[in-house]
Length: 163
Image (cartoon, rainbow, N blue to C red; front, top):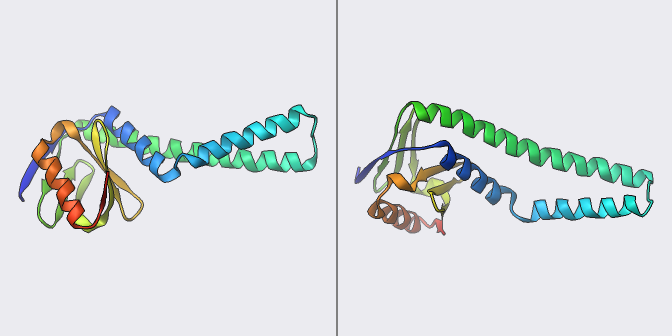
């Protein structure tokens, strides 16, 4: 290993990472479209349109809103569970020329640099979006500037989008 760090997670960082990941997955368009459709539906009901088509439209819109709410709740429940486990012990991060090694109370993961599809640096953490539709976060308070630069350079060399 070229670099080794002890990671200190807290619920705030894990929650912020979950919301950041959801923002990347869902994107800004879906909630805006839902708001626009809700506005249109409200305008139609206010104008007196009570047809079966508006009822069907309302039902479909309700299903979309409930799906989004269920996605957020499931993700936040997972974060709360992970935060409780992570509070019991520390985690460690190893960086090498071949990839990343994470060890925590939740288990061990060894990821080659090519397993990461995107890296997003936020105020309190690095968000590593993985190719299989998952993510992991690294708290910035636990990393030094040299380690952050090493992660970014290694990912750039692997052809990963870094922002």
